[in-house]
Image (cartoon, rainbow, N blue to C red; front, side):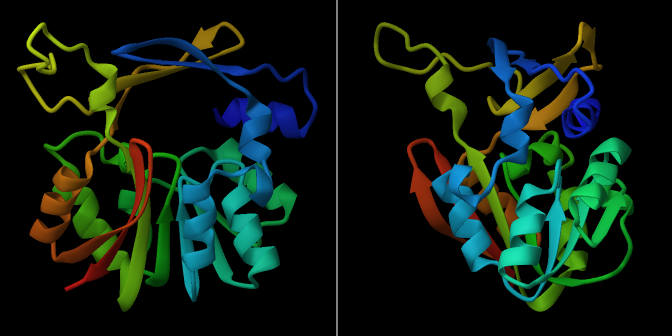
Length: 230
């Protein structure tokens, strides 16, 4: 994804990304979408950006669209964080003042008033087996009265029903734990673990790790949640 962002910004023969998961077929992701402005964002993203305040950490910043809006339109102090060095270079070239290429788990002990995790922000948690590690790290990065704004989708709708109306979900794990694969210019990255969470499962995990949680917005099967420290 970082290479696609780099190619698009530099107009170096960019192509659209192709994505797939362990339960879905190949789908096109236009790289241009990662460079959208506020008006091109969905209602969940727009709501989160309006609620952001203080010193902000944008986790999984990608091409930096969320960070740029908060920095330039809301005049907030924003740090863009992404695991992809090429994405972070593009963030800087687009004008993001503070942009860091690092895994969130290895990020510094700096603390923030708002932490954003958008575009299925729960995805980076990978699986329920390790979600506590990520939530504890987020807890350490958050100021005492700060907030985490995170979105996800309950993907139960993607599974078939049996003749009695029951949902046919895997018996060997949580149904939102998927393998996620990105293809670009004929090359494919190794599958990564990607986690979609229904609200109640996120609520249980958040409360177990010292957070209060509230649902801010529901849009069909997707939602925006706010976590604060207990």
